[in-house]
Image (cartoon, rainbow, N blue to C red):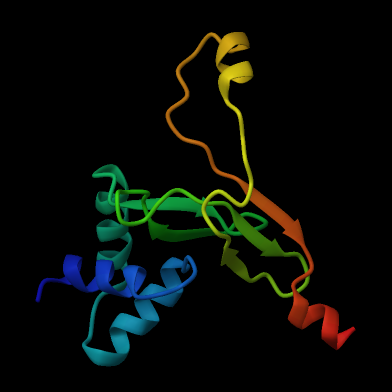
Length: 126
């Protein structure tokens, strides 16, 4: 199995987007892989439209499967306390881009929606 396939399996097999470090650590547990190789593969998968790069809070980036027919576009929830990024149900937050498209002279190619707050686990701890 190629390293590209391994990276895709790790991303696709997780219920939440992962940091490059998390992907590297997961892959390295089963078979040695170079950290730079993981970053290069992620960059290539993003360029090919198979993986999307998302804001993970602060200046961090995370990676998840890009929207496709089996994985619809969806918003994410970012916990400001623990930093967790969770996928929300597709369609749980409606965004009407028609108004933006009428007032924006450019071409919108993608939309990233992230809701920030405190997750239920952190609320229980408080």
